[in-house]
Length: 419
Image 1 (cartoon, rainbow, N blue to C red):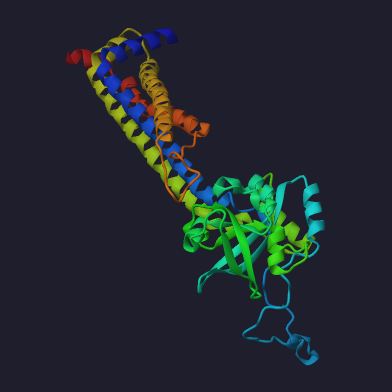
Image 2 (image 1 turned 45 degrees about the vertical axis):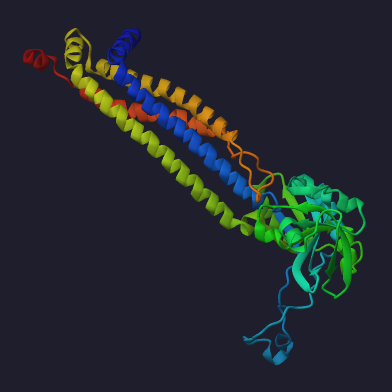
């Protein structure tokens, strides 16, 4: 059968019931547009929420964990060495938090082609002195250039310049919530007490806001040299090495490899943040479920319209079959009608979906807890548009297949005799 003739007949049937065709196409357009908009917004929001933690989290963290000594004295006694000993209230051993031979480790990481970069760090607890009140806090000694390059540290500075902690001697960057407690601003001097009881003045050169209120109440940052001075430690003293990899999926395997190679504890990002990945997956799954439901509902609308079209066009179908059209040709005509609705309605839906997403992307979203966010987050992933286009064709094809199958089985003799 001539496909041009089939397309011509399908076009005539579409235009003959133009209002019904338009309603069906609008249903597809609306569902595809909402599918694109919903997924773009939800995944953009997921990226924003996960980024608050994951952008600041290394793929692998090398450190020495505080843990009890494995070989307790009772196990060293010959007469108890072969027995199972139950020991209560085991205290941590004398293992040091310092990473042994940290310079050699950093040199090895610099030569590893799987590593994107690394940043050394020192973490120490302190007390910030606010008159007669001591506020518990944590000072992190960082390499500010490495932190800004790998973990976007500079993006979270709301006041001051991040690089000043490496330029100004005895300086510190305070978390915003902590600075508000201390009534401190850039240029002020804050007093803190180290874990060894020594009083130390530091000049505030910046305010840091991560978007996590509880974190900003305790966190502060200084240069590695300043923190080493606070702790009265040599220049080689490092407690953490944060590693960023070129492929995040290799983190679990590399963490095990580094733990053995460097004789340290190694924690990968998947283990440290499994709860965030679970939450992101669930939110994305809900978005896809709602979007696909919209497409299915639109498919039922097309099915109903084509069903009605077949009942109204029984005379035309009977004439087509009486003039030599086979059942499969009639079936093709109605499938062409369905796919035409899906194609043009889906194409319009993709354009409207992009337009709605762009519109949301321009809406101001100013909140004190997220200083780096200016508008609502949108993810323009091409995958969403491909999924939307494929689903529009699949749902309209299935919606047209059942009515077209019914039309192909129409007996022209019965229809004409009834007339």
